[in-house]
Length: 239
Ligand code: IPE
Ligand code: IPE
Ligand code: MG
Image (cartoon, rainbow, N blue to C red):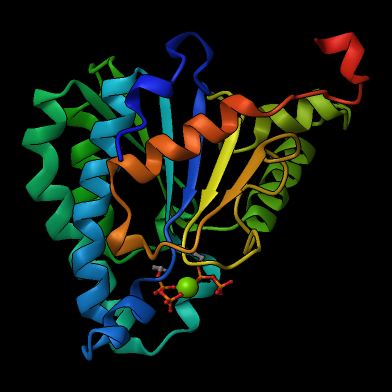
């Protein structure tokens, strides 16, 4: 099914955030080790990045590794970090070709050196691209972000206000996500953008991340466009 024709290009979310979930279960369903699912998830990253750029969505965030994911077996963490370095290196050319700027958010200093370095290099190389910004959330958690913002604010000596706190969040330079998509049927936020998702539309699908394709993404956009965003007002006020 092709949903492209149902999308109103004038009503696109400016920022879409995705919790890419279900890699492990997808692999197990295919009788393979969990890492096999992560490897296949890379193709979904490619497709969804391309779909968002083609549509004209300015910001796409992908939750790739949470603070809590360090609690997985060491070999899985190592495999994920290795896959990350490989993927970043392999994809730079495509990012350049498609004019996509790579950015990252999270406690990046705590990533393995090779991962951090590959990431920094890709961010630098793609910094002048202006078609879309792709934000990887790595070693990220919403509670970490709010805590580091509070600490920075306190160190600056400024008054604690909502605006001031917001300016110190690691996402301050980007608009808040208007749509959050989570794959694999789980109905939770898992410590992702806690503050930033305050008024996001939430979209959950049973499709596992390695099966998630452009048309699934387009269906989420179509669904988003059918919703009435009221921001506390009445339906009459906003229609
Ligand atoms: C998402 O898939 C990828 C990461 C969290 C890094 P999972 O690995 O969480 O897959 P499931 O949820 O166990 O199926
Ligand atoms: C959330 O997925 C983190 C990422 C997608 C990177 P998890 O699979 O780790 O979430 P929980 O632990 O099941 O909530
Ligand atoms: Mg999971």
